[in-house]
Length: 384
Ligand code: PLP
View 1 (tube, rainbow, N blue to C red):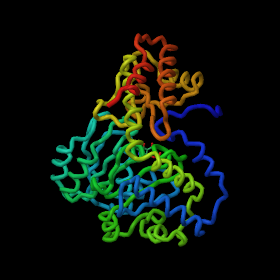
View 2: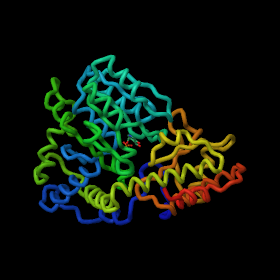
View 3: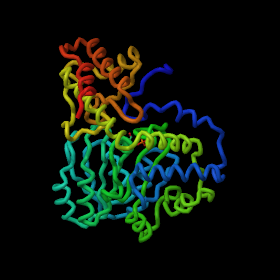
């Protein structure tokens, strides 16, 4: 493995060396006072990042998919009606998880690369007694950012629980759990939080806790039952199941880095990176999947020009430039490439990636006249 290769896929992302080194610290007892303090501080920091004062936050050993399962398994019961915004690969996955739990699902279909229209969602929500509205904030297959603040208002007005997959946004884009009425929000450690893969982090607000309390049917998960975890998060010297101790060190350290950068500054950095990358792609004549004002700050999905072969392009990127980017998912396979610019990414990483995209396209005889690197630099230099 080339130790200097640059991971520019939309997760896992590059992990800061200081975060990585926490993994090598001696493993403490999971019920020791010292570890309890670390976990408590981490929960406090996560509250600031999820922007919730009242949420119960569970950092569990697992990945984003476990996050979706734990999120839904606590509040959804067999035969509950739910409405799911369906505009990407991970939106489909959320539907599959809900179906596995016995929910009756209707979908608000939106083209991949576009975002949900809150008025349309409201219309659909009003046609039935839906228990929950499920939305993926940023679907990593498309890079489109659903308007979750507005969708939260719609869900609230219809008394539906608002369940948000923030796997590809939290830590890189604003997610205001309390203010936007998000009842359950979940993410994974490996994206904009800048931690290796291995943690599912789920936040339950008061309405979700009530829904768990008032279940009429037994819960179908043992490990993921928030009622088993709640006392442990209150007092981490209690035992329910062993915490992923070293991963919590990493999360703890990364959360401190995020908060010392400052959330607003961090979101502004992500916005700038995304703008610079999009400017570069457009400047060399490539087409973006999403509209500018519907694009996420965490990744960009770009169409290949005619004649460019996906596997060759990504092989050149990886083997000749040491930069790993992702291919398209589902119907976008072979048609697009996906570049993650979240977490610890800096200008240097982004400019190197743009230069490598130019070089890899050149190897497939793609002709362009203007420089993407120059366009990105102009974006960086522009003062708002
Ligand atoms: N949701 C979104 C938006 C994702 O991007 C991903 C993974 O990329 C998942 C859910 C699933 O997460 P994981 O692969 O960590 O299980």
